[in-house]
Image: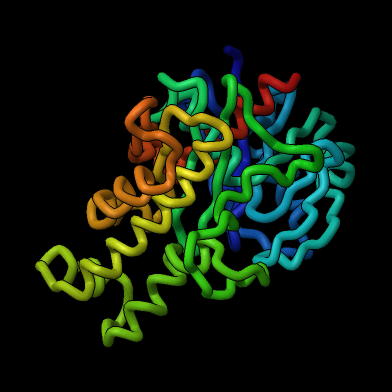
Length: 292
């Protein structure tokens, strides 16, 4: 594999990396402001690859992404709506551009080079402030008709009635994300989720119950998703995924209680992601290389 170039657009900075076989050869991070995003992306690409040794560029961004048309359909953190990033950037860098959602990029990275590389059918659940997702079926990344597939954070949790920021009721993001757990922690008198996690690890019954309920919700949607696409593994990533040890048992229970005939099938396993914060740039670089 020749060098591939991947970029992950965060809330305030751009991470760009040259990648070969899943290993980062060179990486830079530069700040940007929304109004200058196209010029800053071009500058980052020129800085990390001045000799134009890569033929294509992969770009990952949080939000709803239309990969086929190269549009950021909606990115609330950047206030973008139907933003034609590919068409604006391509003339400046004179290379092909593959644009996808950041969770899809991370999922592809984990599938190719991380915790999911032994599986052909897997999902990534990126548990952070919200819950993002990626689906790999038959060793292919599922993007959907408009690049909007695998919004796993908006699968419905049985019995849940919390309203999600998306407007739907009962989404797993509304009950089991870092944002949701922060709210629940404060309702119990904890200052933040770290205090909640510390209390749970120290044996506090109420804190442990909250994490168990969180795990059950994630397990429940994992089971119902598996009923549809027959997964082998569910990879747990995201910053709040680091608390997996506190909600793993709840997730296992929720999975088995919501999967069809668990006694007569191979139940998918949960695994922690391995690539950390680099999953996005590694995944989108590899994705773009494969799209050439």
